[in-house]
Image (tube, rainbow, N blue to C red; front, side, top):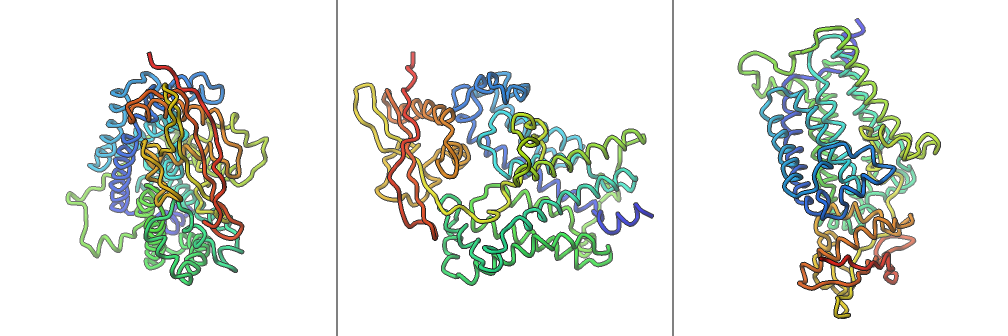
Amino acid sequence: MFSKFFYGQWTDIDPRSLRFFRVLLGLCVIAYAGEMFLNLDFFFTDAGVFSRWYFIFSKARAWTTFGPYFWLGEWWWAAFLILTLAASGGLLILGPFPRFTSAFIFLQLVFIRHRAPHIEYGADNLLVVVTLWSSLISTSMARHAVWIRSLFVLQVAWIYLVAGWTKSTDSWLWSPVAVDLALRGDRLVSPLGRALLEWPWLTSTGSVATLLWERFAPLAFLLPKRMVWGRSLLVVGFIFMHFAFDLSLHLGLFSWIAVALWSVFIPSFWWDRLGIYWSNGADPAHADCVQSTAMGLSLIGLAILILSLGLYSQYCDLGGKKSLCDQHRVSFLKTIGLRQSWRFFAPTPFRNDGWFYVEAVDVAVRRVGPIDFHARPMPEGKPQAFLELYPTYRWTNLLQYVTPIQRIPDLNIARQVARFLCGHLGQSLGISLNKLSLFFVLEYSQVSYNETVAAPAKIVEEPCPRSE
């Protein structure tokens, strides 16, 4: 009776929806691998910003250096590993051994996070957790499978409940300006998002709708199985919300991973209406390889661990007790925990922005710059597109560690960036650089964005390594 209640109320996952979910997830993995390939020279070789030894000799991260990305520091080796990840995504699309393939992808994603932790953001974190759940869930009616699906639904619902209930009602509901403020951030806003600022009523409506939807829509999981419209509205609503995020802000793969996640809850009714059935009458997702009670209980324990780590990570990101959330003590546990730092500007977005540029001196004591990270002269005044200043948009995640906005810049990371840029920009310019300085221009206001530009601040000045 208990299992039937949970299957009817919480865990009605159609095998066709599960198959579709894994196809979309495989596409996201391939796109992610392509993204990492574009960053291969910068973050995955010994000639990049961080060599392997930077992590190996780090007390905080030494335990993460067991993965294959630390075996060799050559370009070809990192390229091979990333292409292996892309091939795994293709295998997940094709369908054989989906749970084993998902587990293998999960391990590869963890290894990438350990090799390049400074460029990760919410989408990477979500992709890791979703692929791990993909390795566990099936449509089997075995008791352990029902429990695992129940925990999976709880995980999904909890993500949005936390996102909704941590948002400030002042800026999201009573004076709904949160979306307007988010769209005024030059680093993230898209052309469509900038155009939406011309319709304040639309951004105000978006603030209110986002808050209420995230707070209350997940409760639709409790609707009876026969109420198809409730589950359908839930899926369509969250997919629409994430498409709106993606069209108005540069969020990378985040929205697409979330869309793949919600596709697993498409009701059977719609597949039947479309006339889509398994051609051979079999359900490959329904097959269950668990033959013993002990193995079933082990899988339930793993699912509980995943959910617990998600709750723990959210607790720490939302200001949990420092003694329980010390970064060095819990970094292992947070490897597969869900961070909520990507919870869409809760409570409000920052009211400041800015950009980086470089000045240097070559070996002939000639001044070079100001230039961007492509060695191009900086435009006068404010750049039109911040992301175009850097080799890839992943650099904006790295540069957050050295941005003097609500934090003290990490000078150790700043020096690593400066040393890499010495060689990278010197090669682009065809000269040898003797010294390089990294500058940040802060744009801030007490009311809204883009009102006052402060004088450039020198983050670090670093002598360039001499090439042999």
